[in-house]
Image 1 (tube, helix red, strand yellow):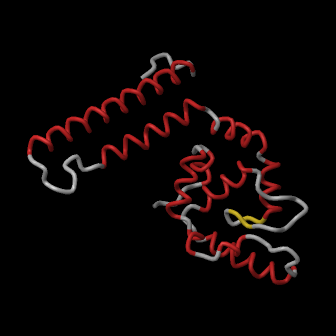
Image 2 (tube, one colour):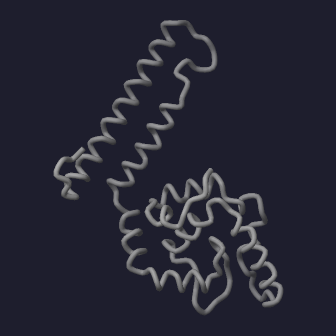
Image 3 (tube, one colour):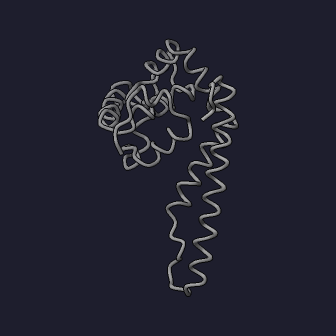
Length: 180
């Protein structure tokens, strides 16, 4: 996975951000308690753990995706230092959320766009279908292989057609002169 820039993360939908985090986050192999302060934990202990969590985050290829998702989720609090997400403390997340409130509102609205979510889901399904082996695990005869390949090609064409329809409709609504 290549590193996602802040600009890329800002223009990426929630589902894609979450997928990137699920696939490549460095914290996936670390102790999950590292990122959250426990009840009644002494400040000095939390500061050391927080610093370690931030060190892990800084080298993470999906740090910006994690930060963006944390901002969209409303994580962090100005008054309580109790978490780290995307290499930022809770207070830093809250400050960033305040500074970027308008952009984040638009991003959250876009994430809730049903048609856009359907487009993303269809795109994932298309990539999955295209990557499947139509011949199965065992050689079940030439006729069955041809049937499988034909069925798979039909599914791929149907998905591609639906994706194209959604894109064309969205572009036309956005005012594109020619909805390509």
